[in-house]
Length: 183
Image (tube, rainbow, N blue to C red; front, side, top):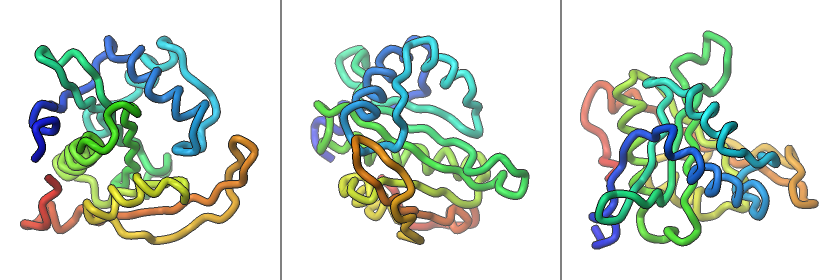
């Protein structure tokens, strides 16, 4: 691992992280096609979003600095669908501050939430990624996700129709035995 990666730590997000998470999120919402969401969040909305998560659906942050005071990015697990039949399937989200990209932050976060998903007993993890987001697609592929479909022209953002790539990873083998490592 690089020196930058080893200087990073991952911890559970806390309400005090809300402003920083909103900053990272809002840039992606307003300026990029990394998410199909179009509504920025203020600190209050971000705290409510954090509060809606549970141990089975955690939010974690990658932190750096001597006192781990710099939030470089975050990842979250959410229920895939609200119906009971989907209760063992989760969806991941990973967002990295633009100043911290290409330093292993996304990989660290995604590997961490994969381990948390296994520990929580989830069966499958999905990622819905705008098709042009090559960095996120490459990250997910590197950690064992496979492309299972493309939704064509399903979202409009910044004046463009977007395709969404759906990636999936079965967590079952990790529940019952050794599998590839995610670190």
